[in-house]
Length: 124
Image 1 (cartoon, rainbow, N blue to C red):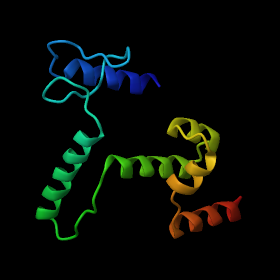
Image 2 (image 1 turned 90 degrees about the vertical axis):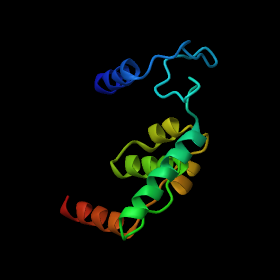
Image 3 (image 1 turned 180 degrees about the horizontal axis):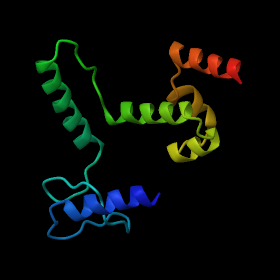
């Protein structure tokens, strides 16, 4: 959406300008760069999230579980499925060639989700 595009433009405008804009496979304008002005990759985010969880767990009694970029990917997929996104669209966004991977591996439904869906159908 235009709102998301505007948000991305703001992130790029507000980041520290690199000496040279990195280019990877013909793509530039990466949102987040590391200290060497290279695009951040999953390992950067994993360490960043690990640090956040460690800090949180030192402060609060109920610990936060380990969070990784891959956990975020599963959460995104589950939330989009729960919101009613078309499964084929979700499969495309996730980059899965087989929809069963999207539905059976990445989408997680819990008791509360099933209960809410049953109530929704019963009220229709």
